Length: 416
Image (cartoon, rainbow, N blue to C red; front, top):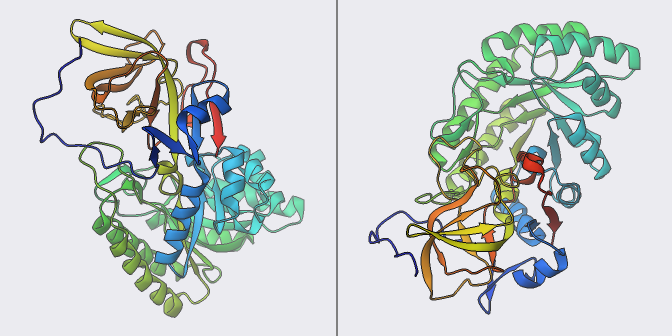
């Protein structure tokens, strides 16, 4: 017996997942039907990242944002093969640990185009960054003191920018990274004092990094934050010990994960940035404007795929029990920052055009009620052996999940 479909036809729906083609009812990822891709993987579950979609996203941004340097924030997805691929297409990489720094260097990225951010860099990490010659985004007075000694001891300059905690925050964002009391960066009102200390310490000052928020689908809010960030940088530049060469305006561009969300309209953001490029040419003539993006570059290019192990009916509700779950994809389970759990877009990847539909919940093999990938969602009717696809899985998936939880094996990762 199938679970009945919901009566309310007007309920919010996910944005269409049209980035992957469908052939003969099967989703196609990286040019291969999903069933064949699963055979090539050798087992499920797995993540697959489509390199074509990544390149198309970068090229679309370049066309829309002339004069803006594009950096990839590796924390979104640090898979080495993906980073190697990305390093060929973007202008720089942003890392958040010595581990990510090693991957960036192994990928062949020019150290001049790598920046290192993070509120708790160890002395060893700072030493590695100076030795490698990358740009360090300062987040405290302590880091200045450490870098002064490290640079003197190693006999090489410590390249630095100041990560500023702005006196505003991104409105309508999924994650606020600046404004108010934050562990990130240095409060804007204290930056002039920090800049004076940077000059006295003889560090090689290069610019500012203003990261005010992430995952916004509101172009107006992003434009407002970018304008405020630029104006703040202008005021702070008056106190800088050297001309501003790098102005990182953060990212903030979101992608539509949940029902009712619409894709970001990039046109207003592009127009706004074009005006800021013109202002920078006049007021900060040595500065290059940087946009630091993670999930916007890779999030929509990835899928998580698991296989149905069992089909269970419990008091009228269908449960599809799979070999994947929250230990592999914490974000899709709703346990990675969601206050109220909402479904990611999910489909039965080998039955994309099946007319037989039902309401079902997709759960994993773990002994916890939190192990849910889709809660009472309309799906094609599935049986053991079918492939469940979680879209929007290219960012904050594998590396953001508790892979060792309950001793199940980790998923594979593939760049296809």
